[in-house]
Image (cartoon, rainbow, N blue to C red; front, side, top):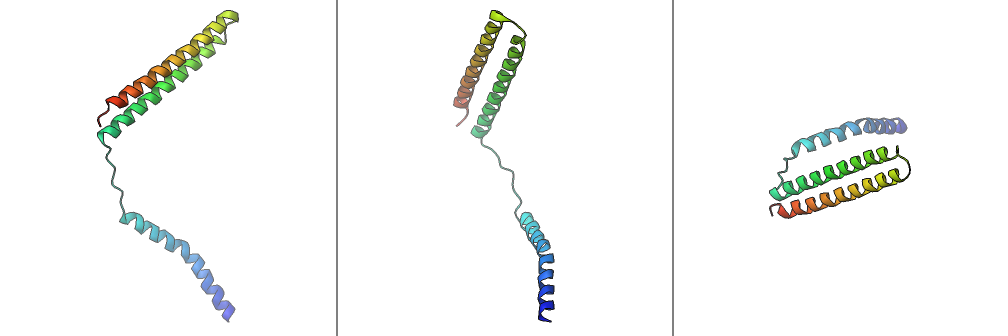
Length: 110
């Protein structure tokens, strides 16, 4: 009899435990609604600078990949010159993007 009672209680507790946990989590989430955070002017400006920098880096990488693909179709000295030019243009574009980011962050409101 004791064994039957123990297994019944244990089974019921295991069956009802997930439902009880789900109910408490649902109530706790409803009790604490998250208010949307408002970013400061500085944080907004820095975010814009970072997004612009990421876009410039992506464009530089895409342009470099396209130039390398074009250069691979060439032969000899022409190919090596095209690859060198592609690398130099990527390096220049990344330097310009870095400088623009630095200037943008410096100009951001404090």
